Image: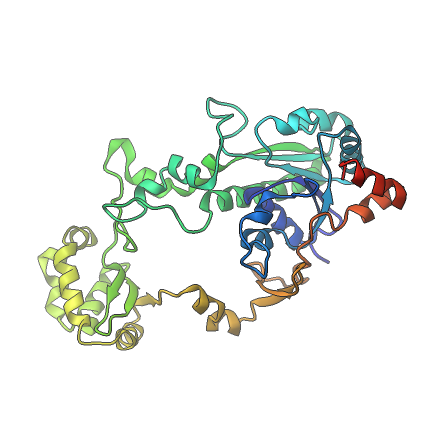
Length: 393
């Protein structure tokens, strides 16, 4: 049995943070009913058309869900939504504009009066109070506000992360908080409100650079793909023009690196490089030594030496190379999920599932489950057609 089978989640979500959280719940067996705007749906559906005409963000975060179209500003749609929540939902998730859910009567304070065991998770950019409460928030903006951009990139150019780090952080904290709330309810019968902010989620992930810059100390420098404070740790060119990524963690590895890679054992006791802090401070000199040693070798030969020496290393893979990664293939991490454009590959959720396979059902078409859900509540085909004409669904 999947661990969340029997749990129903009603979600008013868009973009990434909330859909990513609810997809994790669906992976574990929860029934997730996604409320979407008629004719348009979650605006992430239109981000791009990279997956056979479907949006890459959307297919990633929305498998195994049911899509119900409702114009929640319409009185009849509000009645349908409220009935769905009161009769079916264990959890309500929303990441609408600040205050929108409360105006629709979907706040925990309102819903819990009618359904005391309900769990309501509100996901926002900055949280439900404070001076930034009503400020618009997107992933890039939160990466900036949380200081992520200031410590990422090159000395000349700050950069954002490629993936949606702030959205992913908030989505994962929403997911884990919902799991904890379900456990709490199982023990006490009590529901609760969960308030997750993107800023707070990413700021937690920024704790290392925050502490590094404690009490107005200098922050970690931007060092591109190299580590800001550990060296050598990052990309280095080989003689064939390819790049090798490597990382040293301690003095034992530094000694081996000097002996086996640089072929200069005396460097291990060179005062310029006798600690990580000194090596980091003398990056220019050490980089020149490493590049000189690697210049006579191909990237493959460098990796072979690193492997024999037990030094951590990696390839800088392209997306095509990740699709074909031998480790993912060897561990059987790929499955197929259906979509409106046909089956596509999808990664198994991380972790080991010993008792039951994770749920990996189809990515829904917009409004695909509207008729079925309304039919469950006694709406006839004629009445559903009328509601569609009126723009309710």
